[in-house]
Figure 1 (cartoon, helix red, strand yellow):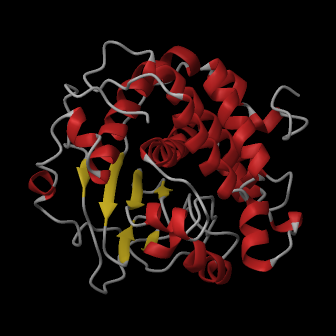
Figure 2 (cartoon, rainbow, N blue to C red; figure 1 turned 45 degrees about the vertical axis):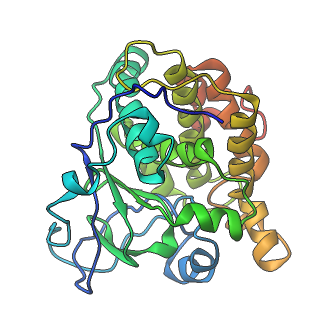
Length: 311
């Protein structure tokens, strides 16, 4: 399996753990990750599957300004066991810390080199409570991993990885978990590029802006996966991918496709309600990023055929 080199040095400065004890907190905005086109569908599908995806909400629970009252003050101590690559290969939370470190080190060079803009790192929130207060509103663990552009935080309820295996049939594993976080960081890259607006303009359908946003985030995850394993200067070193690593990632892209989730949940598919892309599309765009390591090959918004990234 894909793993970090044991002597990698982890940095927990931008990682925190938060929860909610019942206060609403948060404001309104886009919520990227987990869910379909509205609250009802989030509850109907998200609670059952907790799938990763894109959900555009113009009105999200809560109101007023965002506050961090529910954020634990001892996050540094909470992740004190995450020091080395060996820890990342042992514990799921440390795997997320190390992956976030690797993503930051990669994108701080790749984004200015390939897109001509500066990279600002998001924060990572590893929450274990049933709900979490965010800049996009209050979210339950049913939403699954998501990115909130209002506070520029990637939120991961680590229990999602078990749900992905038990309810969606994923094989799981370290590399599959890394792909999930790399996808959420892909949404952060889109936020910096100004691409998230396309999902708001056109929130569902097989050829929608929402699907194109989602597939681009998959492609960006592939760009990182290729580039990170070739980086010899980062303090967080990833070992080269094995065929098993790629198979686990491809399995993850397949089980969170719209068609797979809809067939699993309702026994049929309706492409007019797609917001994530099909299993085949998600795999194809991830592999495009992985094979090329080129952000410019991830322009889903100009693709004439989402089934064929070259078109």
